[in-house]
Image 1 (cartoon, rainbow, N blue to C red):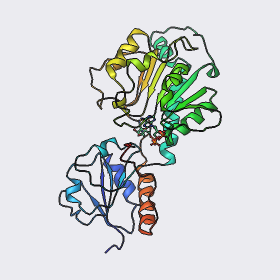
Image 2 (image 1 turned 45 degrees about the vertical axis):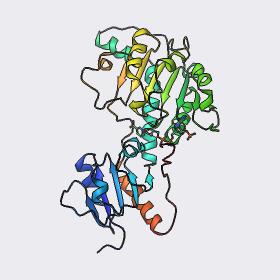
Image 3 (image 1 turned 90 degrees about the horizontal axis):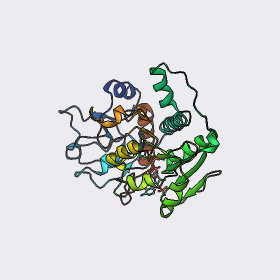
Image 4 (image 1 turned 90 degrees about the vertical axis):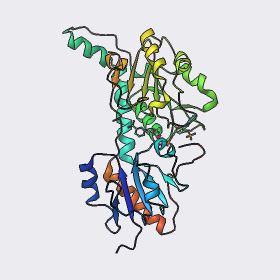
Length: 316
Ligand SMILES: NC(=O)c1ccc[n+]([C@@H]2O[C@H](COP(=O)([O-])OP(=O)(O)OC[C@H]3O[C@@H](n4cnc5c(N)ncnc54)[C@H](OP(=O)(O)O)[C@@H]3O)[C@@H](O)[C@H]2O)c1
């Protein structure tokens, strides 16, 4: 019988990857699977979850801490049956580094006109395009949390001029930063807009026609570009499609959508200036997730404070 608190796992991730990660995780704890309908979860003290079943909290009434399988907690916080216990976000170097790779890749892809060159390749067309330098282009990152702060630094290393926006103003060497009251000033400087915001009541629908119209026109890329890997609920897709069609935006890279998977008849699929990835910008490394949760459970049982606890009042 384990002396440490039992853990229930309810992760809607690839089953094989969960099995492989569990082989070396929570060695001195009882691990229960919510996917097993006969499992008795009544004594579980912790849950590690991604899109958990609604009935989890009835089946596991003694939960003390909920560990999110990802950095975003909008799904969990939106569950009507969520008990009033701490929710811990997943913060890990693997997640941060992957996101920065994706952001830098997308910014460079638009700088170096990859969508146009891919079209020319399909058309067997040999034609060199004008080539602005990264330092002529300003990338504006909305959301300067764990992910945004790493991304701005790596964009800077690539030579971009970088500006950042967040609720409270940040101090980051070499980066001009803005707080939430200075959104228009921030947008007026931005050629490539990067969304790395959580989905909350304040950020839902934030990326709309009005916002796109305030981005800098006529910069080194000609027209502004929109890149989003935060949450799809923050973008108004009808406005985004119009902005891409009427030239308010010159291109986009989208990892997240209002509805996922993206519908087969979405206009985005056919747009040659849009790069689509299937919510894959930064997947959680399940082994790292379990390591992270396990060490926090041990610390919690030793009387230490939990880290990266979600503030229910702000929603992130
Ligand atoms: N596509 C993917 O694969 C993927 C993977 C992981 C995460 N994500 C998304 O990325 C999001 C960000 O992750 P993170 O770890 O960087 O989160 P975080 O550390 O909590 O940072 C969130 C940032 O957003 C800012 N913010 C939130 N609400 C705001 C508002 N109303 N106005 C202005 N700024 C606001 C915060 O400002 P303050 O600093 O002032 O509080 C903070 O800088 C997650 O919530 C998730 O949705 C996506």
